[in-house]
Image (cartoon, rainbow, N blue to C red):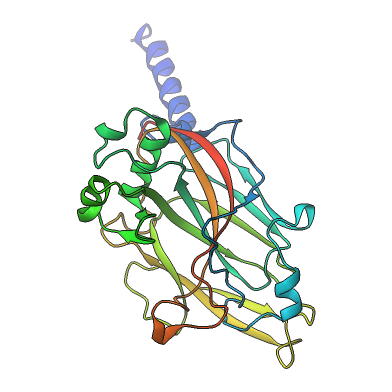
Length: 304
């Protein structure tokens, strides 16, 4: 009995130590858990996008109040040090996460945060896209997010992807996963952790929230006289914004990125709240989901 006791004590100590390690270790390092490792080659400063043909930018805030003509003529996303977005990533975590810090963007504006394919898919199957990391990444984003057809200028469904590719259309995958709203100076700070596939943003009162849609976030829009024309200058307005879940994708909070090596863009897109969708809903300066800022991002997903 005495010879067995030291072994039993040693075994008990090992079990306790092992349990403590599992409980205290970061999730990305736990046995069997997914781990996302962001490459040091990833860009942390977003660059202004020049898109051809020209996009329909939005010149109204998140509550549809129009900006002044003076602000419209002076503002540019390419204003250098005065305007931009910086990103700080968690280098190793259980999902892609970090913080975006915006400075000098349009005030009171809602911006989508997306991962986007840097190249169109090469085919309508994973095997067809295995030859290039950018093809493969675009394919994976589309499978868990949405497909954008450049030739059509609109989104296409999973069932229609093969036909569009066969017809020679450039189709890329993208994933809307979060958003932010700027303050009266056009600044914002938004932590993010990628766990959802979203369709689009809506204002509270625009559309009934579905069971899988996000809860609303509420913002107070303060309208500085420099950016708005009278009588809006100096006013305040509260607006609630929520995200619609992307149908046929994992439920909100349950999305996990497939394992592999990703080369994608982190993209900022102006949210237009369907202001110019259809002739009967056209709104001057309402915009059409303009892609405005982007940086290149590389990361590895392992485990899971």
